[in-house]
Length: 360
Ligand SMILES: Cc1cc2ncn([C@H]3O[C@H](COP(=O)(O)O)[C@@H](O)[C@H]3O)c2cc1C
Ligand SMILES: O=C(O)c1cccnc1
Image 1 (tube, protein in one colour):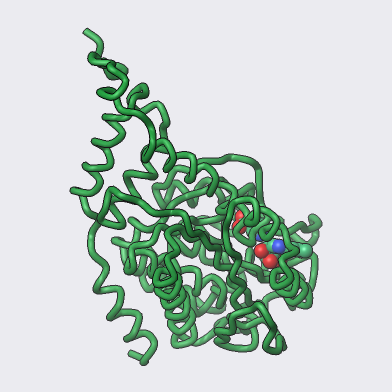
Image 2 (tube, rainbow, N blue to C red):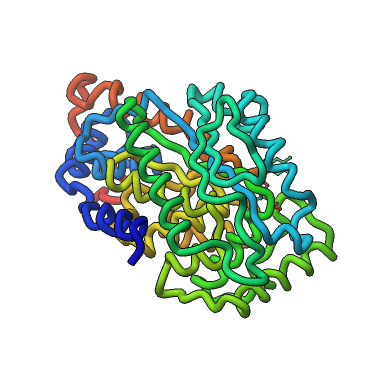
């Protein structure tokens, strides 16, 4: 086993199960809160799950950040995206300048945007972009593996370390985002491996693609699977052969959330594939993964089902950059506001309370 893989493996072993005690305490808080029991639905569940993750019913989600993992994908040479890799650089510059969609949304949500360069092709050090380069873009995986196993592990490590750093800075709620032209092709290939479904069923138009482009994308995914033969039982093999640096770092962010006890919001399709990869590496990491919305990509809902996560939003979004994850942050704030401040049954003098469905 290589150095980076050993590093990741050792950290993963330290991930503990969620605290059922803290979850019960959070549930008791909702029970005392003067409202029809369970009536805030998932807004109640997320507070309970976050308590179970952090080990405390007292939650602090004031400070928020979205990590936008950026990287290029060699498979773009196969005409699988409507644009070429130079657009990734343009998006990264937009992120650093605070001008892309996620930046506008994050400003409203009181969330810091952190662009991270994992391997954007020929990108020199750029102000406002954290450099965690693993390579100069991945290889074209229709011809051979996207990266080495050690590169995949290093990208995971970077994702985990960033969560630790942000936790130390007081961040209590994290969102995952990505920018990388071609990354929906990599995500589709990974999803095919773990669902066993054929590329025609799971391949979508990504950022936008003609019918002909979609056909090219389906055959590129098919070819990638045939050429590389990724082993479904070895998540690092799948990541290295048909994944991407951005997806690997995102996977690391979920694992980091589980290790350092920070809730991590998944975004759309790409992010859900990364979360699935994290769970395949370490099932206990499930406790750190929080769904946000249902991506409009064909496999969006299916992946959430595989993750067994319920989305707060179904808004037909398919933008990436972490936009869907950031979109639910105000809902988290609202849930926390009621959870923390609502008057209790005893405070308002309501004595009898009959939970729904339990009337005699
Ligand atoms: C201008 C622009 C901004 C974006 N921001 C996010 N994406 C999204 O689209 C890309 C994936 O789609 P595909 O696999 O089809 O290339 C990723 O960068 C993703 O974040 C963008 C795409 C474009 C074109
Ligand atoms: O759902 C996603 O994550 C997605 C879909 C299309 C383009 N970028 C991201």
